[in-house]
Length: 242
Length: 242
DNA sequence: CGACCGTTTGAACTGCATCAACGGCTGTGG
DNA sequence: CCACAGCCGTTGATGCAGTTCAAACGGTCG
Image (cartoon, rainbow over all chains, first blue to last red; front, side, top):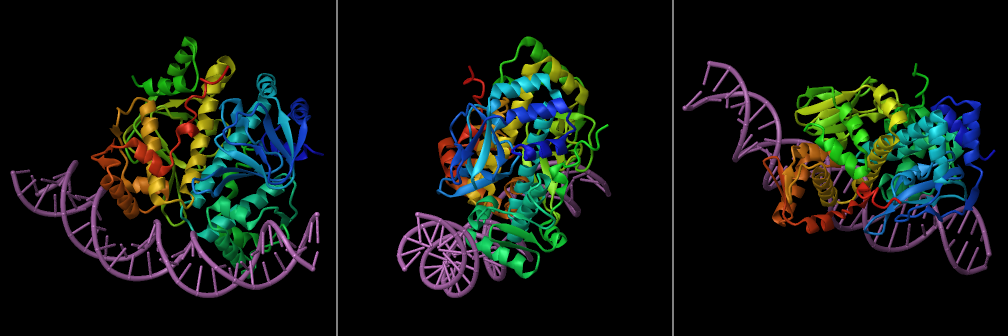
């Protein structure tokens, strides 16, 4: 199903009733295809639709003054592109499809409507935004002049876990449809150095990227090498609530 | 007034009725003093209160594996410390008072109550979170291996503007009660290099930090040098709404 | 089969880190 | 009122992780 990933993600975040689940599915009624390399939303525009990734991978990015690109988030199936535009009027960054993507576009009014009718769903959206913020903080912590291997390893750890969460990964591998250039844009390294770091991971039998797939040989070693602690993804957010 | 900064900030974000303003003021009824260098909230805890900075400066931070500290946000008067804890159960970072601070602590239930009674205020809080997220993204963009002068200059530009917004700055100067070490922790540079960068700004008659105050001699030069574009702070968020 | 895109490897360079020391200001206790 | 301690800012010398430039290799698609 197209909306599987979204429901999986919401289910992880909060317990939803059948009615709320229905409401979430209803959001995905209008779908468009965005081909690889094309912007889903562009900087400076004020989109009149909220976008949700249903299939494929996308990325949030800014173009820097020197023309290079900085990726600030990877968007997997189930992720919102721009709830921001419900309240902030202008995109301060762009979103590009890294693979061919199926994107649901939703009338912002519908979100407002949900906000008033199904509070639990609102809380789930709200929570999902806060998790996005936590991920951003973690990227900031990992990016700031810490070692290149740590930054890249951490990114792989996060993507692997997030892919698993929405059902995109098996025990020790998943599709990783991103180039080394894109890993470089996300970590702030050069593609050349990303290549060397990935080679080291391969040589140490930690993880291998081949033909668009990530194979993890030793997840513990990967987590150790990159200081990865999944707590920041707040996966058990609702388990611990009364 | 203690709550002036909070009201100024909310007023910038959204037009509020008198009743909503009253509700915001009511949030600040319980205040405690947190002395400089003491944690307001600590990582790993699940605070049962939401905290709002009323006076003084605070910072969000994580301790890295090597023992160093990474600051991920500066909190000025009017800023929320941890709305997160309304929905996410566990702090994945700490918050420390950089100066002696007056902090309002609010029962999370009160926030929920406001959410149902005064939707405009809820939207203002929501929007303020999204601005925080935008600031994080910008830090990520500026931090990722761009030049040290750009990173430091951008931080000063942002702090100056944010200080002005809540009434803490005059035309070309404001109190900047943070050490070079703290600028280093925020930019991912070493204190030594921060010092050299600040010297360069001073020598070029761009900006000077002296005795806990930032004097800006040439704001345009500062913005140019650091590629600062205030748009990401979404200051005119509500002006452009219908 | 050629063109293109992404990956891989090498060689030389550099911005920032690291280590180390000193100077100035502030507060504190004798 | 002075002496000392501690914190913060400043400056110099050296080294390295990652950049930059350049070139070759392999798969894939029209």
